[in-house]
Amino acid sequence: MIISAQKGKQNKIHISIDGEYRLTVDADFWFSCGYISGDEIDEEQYKALEANIFKRRCFNRALNILSRRDHSEKELFDKLARADGDEAAASAVEKIKALGYIDDERYAAALAKELAERKGKSERAILSELIHRGIDRNTAENAISSLTLDECDKINILLNSKYRRKLETEKGRQQVFNALLRLGYGYSEIRSALRDYDECIEEEDI
Image (cartoon, rainbow, N blue to C red; front, side):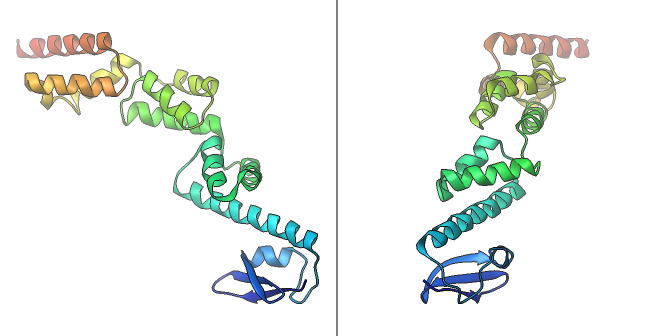
């Protein structure tokens, strides 16, 4: 079989075998392969080249995914595997880990902090979210243990900011109660926080 390479747009190289188009790769990868246009290769060599091309493509896809937001190791693997298969996905994730671009402990700590402070979610809801995103339970629990705000503080912040105006009516109070339930807080925690809020309002009115 004769392999040939033709320059495409930007940094692309189109690879053909015996005149039939097969694959497109980036120029840097092509020139690192050791082949030149017109070389003769056998089926085994082509299969090895093809596998390396798929891995390279998967790695580039991984970089593109991470450029948009951080991911856990499992999240990244699952996304890559759906498009490129398990072998290429595993290879890409290992390279990404070696470069320090993914770190589940770092990711879990940052996400837990965001969910607690920006979205006001309970520890129960944060744990569920972290596990859903592929973080193992032990790492997720360690991330949550590093949070500085306790559950009462988070509810009080929400009651005195985001939900304050809604608390002026009974209908609004029920909506706030339901919203806090969706954030993962328990009935007793919410009732206690609402009592404390009402007491503070009464003291302000005196």
